[in-house]
Image 1 (cartoon, rainbow over the protein chains, first blue to last red):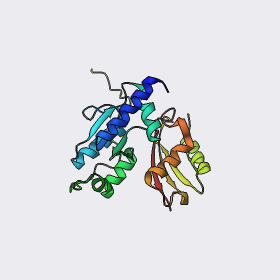
Image 2 (cartoon, each protein chain N blue to C red):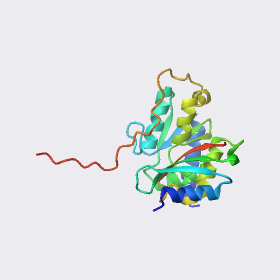
Image 3 (cartoon, chains in turn red, yellow):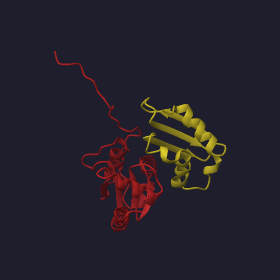
Length: 131
Length: 75
């Protein structure tokens, strides 16, 4: 492993250790760059839990080192108390069952859970030109 | 580009007694949703169950297979 990759892996480990609830995602909570990341952010926000977020897009080595560390191939990845909880599917399932609220130690919100289907914008929308 | 049928076949070949339903979410051959039922999942955590499915595809997930959404059941 190159020295740069070792540094990145150590930085990722440090961030996981320092933040009880931390999400590695594409984009930021304010501007998610992928439907799965957006949905995971919305789930955490619905729980009302504070969480740290790391955008993996700025450098490919962040994602490579994260996946090598977690043995998990896709993004997003949620960690709680230093342990990988899972990606969007597992987070959504655990939210719906109340397990995620228990794990994080917050109240399960009373309102309807986050929509079961991912809100995916079509990758390309062609509109009629203005007349 | 794999089809939903390819993904289904590979999951069923790779996990003991698995039955998979696979949907191509975009029709583009790179975003799939798989529901997988196998007795091999019994007693394993969700993380481990999903890893078993990801492991069928190795580096292809996150590469040519951009997204593989998974739901697992042990029976």
